[in-house]
Length: 162
Image (cartoon, rainbow, N blue to C red):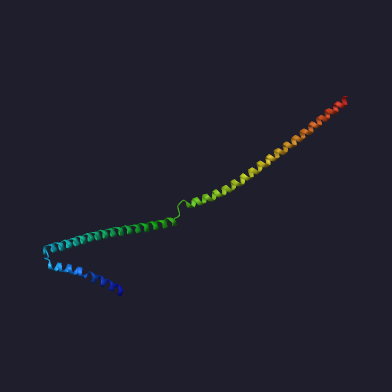
């Protein structure tokens, strides 16, 4: 830090001859007070305008902050109301729910009966089909025996006739 300060002092001393000349000219020259006063007044006016502008911006920001705060409060209140409504809706049981559950139980019972009857019907249809096939086989076997017997009788009848 001392080195930096020493370097800065050395640079400043190097510029001293040039700055001395500027100081001498400023002191020796005639200062136009009107110009200085106008310049100072313009600077003051600019600063005042800047202050007014900043104050207006500050007022606008405060208004915006208030409106945003009020919107946030409204939204919080709405959220709270909706949460309360949701909790009441979740806790309330619909009026038709008892009848619905009773009918659902009846439906389950009837469906179970339907399945039993359907299974029984399918079983009986299969058994009837098997019975018809067995009867058909018996009839075909009896017909074959009958035809065989008829052939044998016809052959015996021919043999007796000869």
